[in-house]
Length: 344
Image 1 (spheres, rainbow, N blue to C red):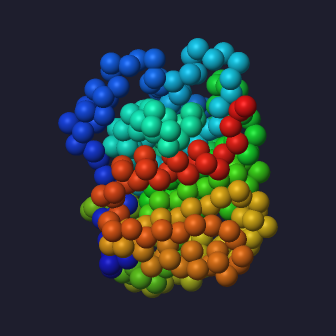
Image 2: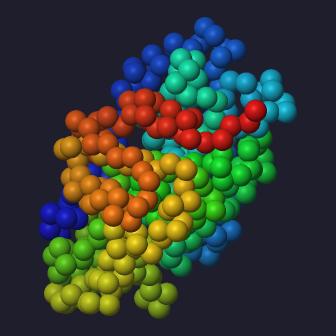
Image 3: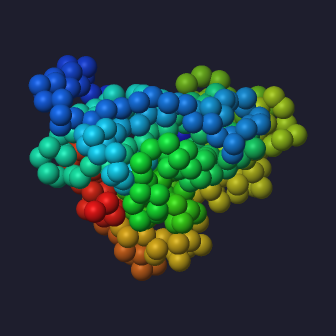
């Protein structure tokens, strides 16, 4: 593989995991005041949209749910919900711990920078290390799982404000891609978006080294990254056992397959979803100045400006993951607090 795929793997597999001591300190800071901290649960949420996927991934997905401090005592109160999508080659639990989600939420509520919200982190780890949050018979329909199946379950089992005006979507890296992709296609489900360091905004198979065939995927560290994209964007139900096509065969580029990659690029799709994007109350994009995806995130910001879609954009001193934990608390949670409708 050339630099493009190597960059995807190096960046998307990097998770800004907070040191264990930091996570422990954050938790310890709240142990003395149990009345002002929230609770959390790890549950399973079945996805009808994921049933029968050809990869054989379970349609029953782990989901982490944070409930704010007043949830247990305020039996009649309902809350806005933020759904957060994790990055490639990581589980939801990895992000739950690295972002110190319960402690971050408790701290921002305590200092007044964010109001009480329910936070939901679904696990999209697959046989190839990530679903790409796309719609494919090979991986399953992850777009519908997030925008319908998961929302329906959370609204049915927790005291949410079951309305798009109180529902937000965010994510980092592959999750940022999922936020942009699902956000464009499902404005009926969400009213606020926050995409962090989004990968895969422009997917160009021409930058991959030719030589791998559809029946013989590449081996080594890059194999799963390429396979996850192929499974999501170029499924082939008649091509067992992988059930996907790679964009090259016998050293030659396959134009039709390569086009499938490209058409799954948000930078290519964005012009088709302007009416839906204009329905959003608020959209935020951020990326580090040393992030390999700085250029494509900047291009997305420029596209939204050209199309007249209201949004905010911030580039900051950082790489693909080293500031994500701090920005989740300082930027993401306050942004949703300011823009989502809360119960009176």
